Image 1 (cartoon, rainbow, N blue to C red):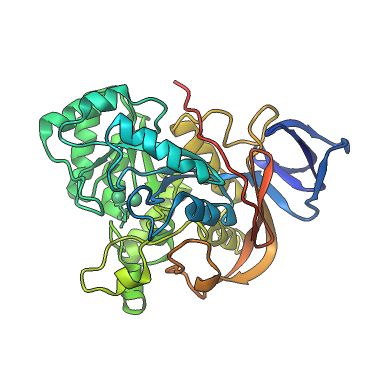
Image 2 (cartoon, protein in one colour):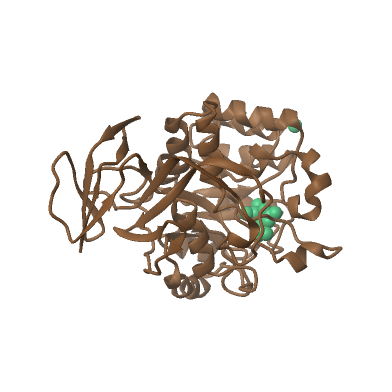
Length: 399
Ligand code: NCD
Ligand code: ZN
Ligand code: ZN
Ligand code: ZN
């Protein structure tokens, strides 16, 4: 099977070039001015083509919580949002904390239409399993309480995990940021701070960046919403870490502009509307379908550059999690692409979303700049609002 994407503006090395992409067997074979003959042709005239986004932080809820989301619906949401690879979190039921459960999750993920990888979970007694786990993005350590009850606070166990040979991804709020920095200083390991949400957390995480193997992730909800929005959103704006002040939000944006922030990821954490209406509502909001539109809308407002978007959403996640052949549009790389119509204006509507939970904290936001097609391993899995159910693959992490 071959595909020619013609007339598009391709993002390459920081700028846009008008070239055609010839794709065969899931790979970008040629980036060319020629119109090579292919089985299928996609006309991308007036569209911008970027590497498909790599969302380093999603909760697709399988196994055990499939009333909220599953690998098919979650991946449909991702594809509709220009995300072609996701890294799934371990706080499922059961949690992904041993090899057998990782294998089970691998089987369940086969229904995904975007490529996928896995973060491995940690408990107070699974360090042997962590050592043995292969081809995982990271070991996830929950230093604070959140969905899934995986909070870990035994110092000797933390020390062991932080000095293992796997990147440590942490959910750490307030002073746990400092503790994570102290722990990583004693090893040569990499540390990835998930969903940094406040000026102070960013400041502390940033101080740890003396060693450049400390990475910072921020999420769209913390970039586009503040605690002031809770009046309207109520529990539908509640997630961990919580929405913060305008000043915190400003600090996160500064971090994006001055390079202290390395990735934007969704923390796509769907819960049903019914669950969110309960008094003891769960924390988390969905985000896969809205991240790129929110960012491209800012690009249209001249507040963000295309280069920043691609670095934070595509290139850096591929580098940090050592994902083979992804994150860049290059000959020989996987044909994972997002086709963007910068002029398309559309409103986010709850009932049009693909996520199983069918709501978004950004419902009714009008945005300009939308993904209109997503290509995964050379297959057009999303085009003009329609899903094409072609299965994707597990990513490969290089050493
Ligand atoms: C996440 C979830 O629901 O799985 N919730 C959240 O509020 N972010 C867990 C997490 O990422 O902490
Ligand atoms: Zn978290
Ligand atoms: Zn402090
Ligand atoms: Zn999360």
